[in-house]
Length: 277
Image 1: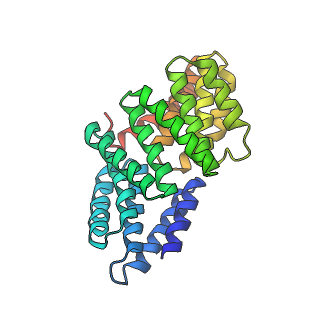
Image 2 (image 1 turned 30 degrees about the horizontal axis):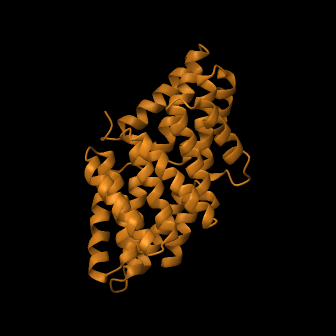
Image 3 (image 1 turned 30 degrees about the vertical axis):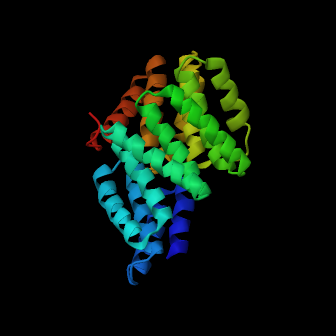
């Protein structure tokens, strides 16, 4: 059961959400036949995480509260760290940033204390994502620097690439364009590991940079090439920014059919999410 859970995470990191969900479901099927265990609590917490990643926040809260209860019952500190991260992200994204950021900071601090490397790295990135969402860019950059240092020291190269991608994004948003471009080019695009979901995020950011600097045809071609893979993730956090930049490209090039298709796709995913207005 625990192996099935781990396989689920690996498939998600590779951009295959549907196969990931199959493995998580199998983990639950196996583990729910036995008495409550830390392995079951981890699988339940993983399902909460998958709902969070898809912006299915009501379902996330249900699974998350169940995982938190199991963690407390079983004194599974690692599960508490994991689920606090998930629940904190949801609260930060749904109008209660103080509560959410508090849970995220507690999760990160405890992960570092317990030497839970993966949970600490996840703690950094979700704290950063939430800080970006509420416009706290200065602290976001500080946490990204800490994450890059930690990921480099622990040889977590995939997480380092994610941190560099977000660092470039924040720098771009705050007007530090040359530095942002250099970080994305040298630290992410030059890496042989820039695949999976992080690779999609990086190329969407590159598409934005190309749009912002007048290289619109390059942006359109890059974004259109990734579109099938982006849509297959089924996650609005990946799909919406990508479609937004693709719509910009088509609009700037006066390509009405492409603009309409991208805008319609964007509105569809937004309308499917009750938390977005």
